Image 1 (spheres, rainbow, N blue to C red):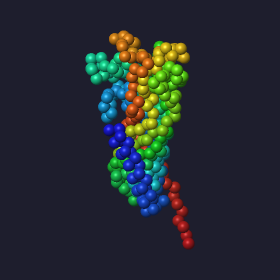
Image 2: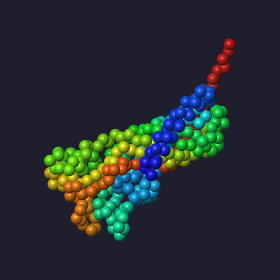
Image 3: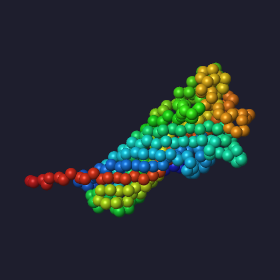
Image 4: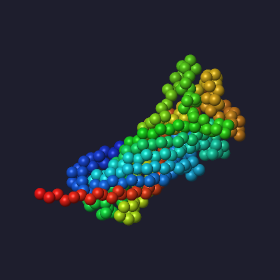
Length: 305
């Protein structure tokens, strides 16, 4: 499913760019226009502390808010380019999303990890309208489905709650990122991950014309990332003795299996025990409404010859 979505996003982006070049030559500059948008969304994530095992599933209790603003330039009858700045939060909790009574989810219940991550995103996307408008903005369709794809850069900082406070996890190196190779004979430890990352946003939306200047839209967009650390969980447990010697707090937050009701379990928290799945990168999804205001076009003086 994830590979299909990635391929679809790249194909959509190529189509948008090729059609834009052809349409731009037939679209008068007088008909191009700009707009500003205000976005109110819900945000979810898919990763190692995923609410469900199915990539397409959502869990309402793990949904968090996302807000943003955007600026859009209409270039052709179908193509626009949008720049947007957004803030949102994603979260996950093994104790709340997994059950000890379900065999499939029991390992996550025992693992007992949790996080929250505030994401600040700057994105640039091209949008492709299903219905074209060769007139000016006043003649745009009342109802217009669209698709979009582009690129985004985002800042993130996963944190976990510990003794009543939220602690940033990346500096702690909970999977051995800050340890030397002497405690890692199998080569499990990654380098410290960056808190600035790239994503590929893509999705579908629909907009409805409220009046001559206002549109109301609904949109669902996926973000393919290239990191497995939105939740600070990726591969294997580090050597707990080496972690504790380097930073006791790192050791405490790396393995929290002993804090769940069943108590400490065999197969958790020791070097090379599986902590996550580094074969899949993390995703996040943004779903919600946007209100767009089309900026009035300045009048143009007629040319006299």
